[in-house]
Image (cartoon, rainbow, N blue to C red):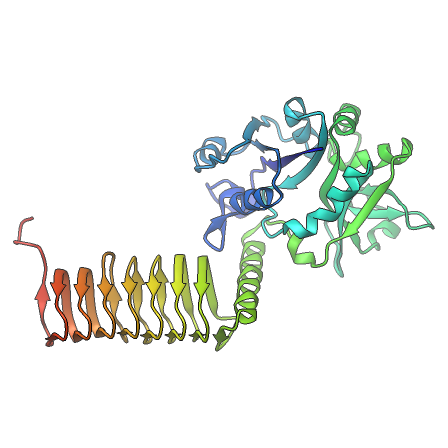
Length: 390
């Protein structure tokens, strides 16, 4: 049974007060839409359709060239049901469909598997969450036997329904043929004048199709982003989740709330990271590496036993074993430090090879240079490939 995924990414995001389409705002240096596409990839979906709208050219040009990705435009913002209807003609009819949202970036594949299992068994799988403050969300209405009856949107809810804490995430899965049938029956007779995708819940109940509501284990996974405050909250949650994974891998974090991973960080054993470290792109830390406060490391490999002193910046560099850098050092692209080399305070290097055991202890610029082994370069030294004009 095939799996098709429809990602709704047409929202304008007015409350972001930005010229950038909402789904292109970043969490952990990766766009929200890219996070969702990563989840789709983890699910090994057979088909993925992105419904875009506002800022479509920017969204389309954002380098989403993955296999099986299809695009369809929603020219009018008439609700989630209308958005899915734009994708319906493209859907494969031999399997199930999962509906996701481009502004909900933190969902894990494991959280989605239960509703996919329900859909494969012929039911309508719905992902819900339990919130202490459910204001603004559609509520899950159940009968006395706890079976799902319908979803009522917040603006259409009665006072009794507003008191319900279980909310609709909008994420659901069902057979493609039923989705296409029910989408065609939606109407916009509601306070918003929109076509609600969630109205198919009542259609399923009326057709005696089982509705399985699965509660997400962590409400933050289903957090949608509509403004900068929510974006900041999701960013912090994402970073805490990354930090928790590092701790479980045996990394010592002096303060797990003060680390930022904006890419992929691979670590060895007995790594220690002090506060306010920022890792960008692809970074590898070997066994026994120690990172002092306020360092930025981007697209670099740090060998075993290296010590990076405070306030150092390392970009596109490669450090062999037991290298010492900083404090206040800057390693620019093309820097390669051999074993036990030392770069001291207020030293900048670029496109430089520093040999084993060599030292540039302070106040120097070493560019476009190969330095041999056991060399000691004194303060104030400048080497560069520059003649004053070129």
